[in-house]
Amino acid sequence: MASATAAAGAAKTAADERGSRRVETGIVISDVRKKTITVEIKHQVKHRRYGKYLNRSTHLHAHDEKNEAKKGDRVEIVETRPISKQKRWRLVRVVERAAVLGQLDIKEVEVAPPKKAEAAAPPAPDQGGGTDGKTLRTGEGLT
Figure 1: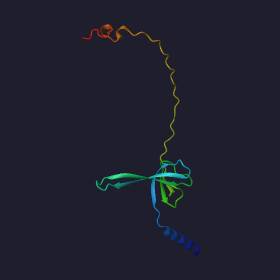
Figure 2 (figure 1 turned 180 degrees about the vertical axis):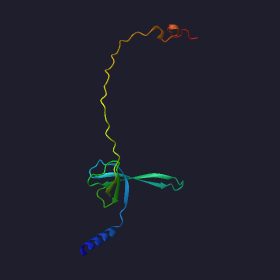
Figure 3 (figure 1 turned 90 degrees about the vertical axis):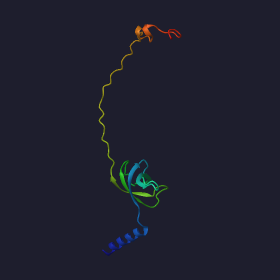
């Protein structure tokens, strides 16, 4: 029993020596790479001069050992030692799964056969484009 409390105390002091690690919550925007996810962290910043709040975002690369996070999931990540050139964060847990759209029921649609092109009939006399059924030549009747 004493060894269990000593081990717990040693673990606690090791965590204190490392310092507190930052924990962030964000949305997975990419899960294409093996064991790596890209998480977008959104925050608001107040403009120095005008006081308007601006939306800002940060993209962080996190290590996902089991490939459990999918695109659109809300995840919790924690700061860790450098794992690769860009990865400095590790996935802790999936807070909320992305809403999955249901399967669309595709119905069979009967396609009508294409209509045969009818022989081009000569235009009717009243559709000649001129006035009174007469065709105008350049320079005639333009007064």
